[in-house]
Length: 440
Image (cartoon, rainbow, N blue to C red; front, side, top):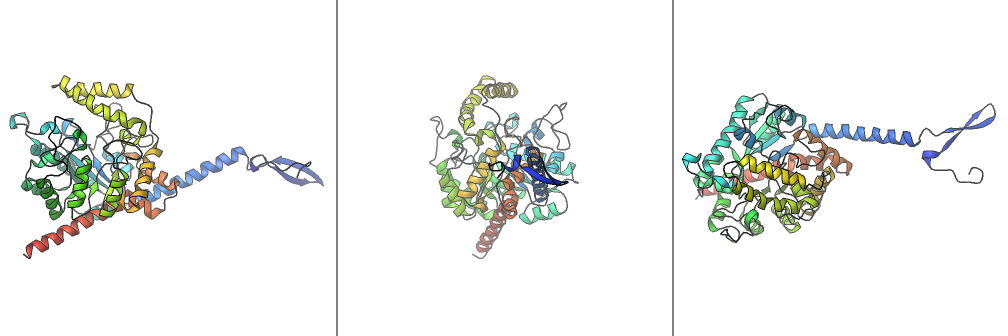
């Protein structure tokens, strides 16, 4: 008590100092300014601990579309995609991959629906496009042997990271790339493809996509066809991970009922947070947990931010309209689409929303069933949360998870260990299936 009053809070507290028999008062050193300084010190210490953990962990990104700038715009990973003077702006390059502590990258072998049924004189069809992208990835590995090394197995990833390099892998995005041929599927595996997204935004001849599931102009299959089930079985047998990002809901459940191995969602998020059909419902997340698979969270704010999910769905229709309006000028169509998005943008998405998706999936599916699938360079250049503007910002995820109290072991699972577990289990299941087949 002082003059009959209670002492004020610590921020305004006075310290008694005895001097020459008198009682004097000085401002408490733990005042407002000092509390702020202490908070900054604590944040800096946490940031340092997060950076150390991040760079001592295996960080795996299962979906990066930098392959499109590589093959279409002449970009090279040795260039600086964030150089203001650069003609090609990207989220990804080698310098920023290293700054982000990336250990393994799955380069997307993206095959757009426009390649279905293309003639050789028009640049070839879907399989040809996939081969061209695979070649572009291999060329980057050839040009940058000091930084990149091709990986085929989970053990390869660990070995390559230990050597100080980034493990390079590939995943086909769009099952139409195999042109309805199991032989082509097997060839892609032999060329290094380690997962295939069964559909892109288009329904193919054997699996329904969420991207056109409501279109009356598309012939649907009510999920997987019999051949689609053969595709899943063959992927299990050869050791290629089945990716259910982009598929229709019924296709997802058909895959879960068909597969003998854990599956992945290479770049999907939570529908409970952002109501977009590209995201996964809680029932799907629980099914992924039971299957033993892993959901790799997509960083695109149009799939993360509930304010933007509806706008993202509307942009699909506009994109198709613009492509029809400018059939020979895809850059003009993209420019108009970007302008529309900018005019309708409700504002930047905080990184906390990305962490919300990770947090929700970890709680619903289980901590062993969530990871990272960025979709860098496959989304609008400004379509990423604050603090996740490019691949160099990956350590911010570790920092934000630490802020929420995640233990180090769980953070390591999210960063890459969960994916490596699934990859190992897919490899083991394939080996068992091949052995059983050989004994018949």
